[in-house]
Image (cartoon, rainbow, N blue to C red):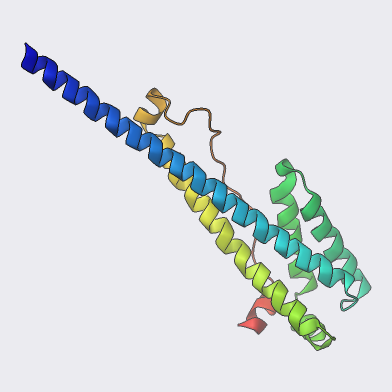
Length: 180
């Protein structure tokens, strides 16, 4: 009788430790998502800021400046629900403004243009990486949250279901090819 109780107690402790470990893992994944989202937000803000600075520098022609400034401003001011669309619009504006190598060359030849083009290129290259890190963390958390044990024992607590950040982040070919 006591041996059976001891085995039941050992089994319950083992199950409790396993559930505790799983909850801790899920918590770490949510913390990783938060850190990756903060890094993504920082890279998106940097890209929009550099684009806005370039648009107001007088290096670009007036039409390109207006298109780039409005897209960058909209991306910086977008509400959370509209952020993906605004960031995609900024990517499209960047591709439209820097569609031709002549525009990139004109920016580089202007005073301070080489530095501005380099900063913009770096910001544009970092956004897809930050987005990939964020979406990978979201994918891992979603996979763990789909397990029955997580749902049955409510190990996720009240944490919202993680959402991936989907946007058009294709860089302007003329700007990125020139820097490579």
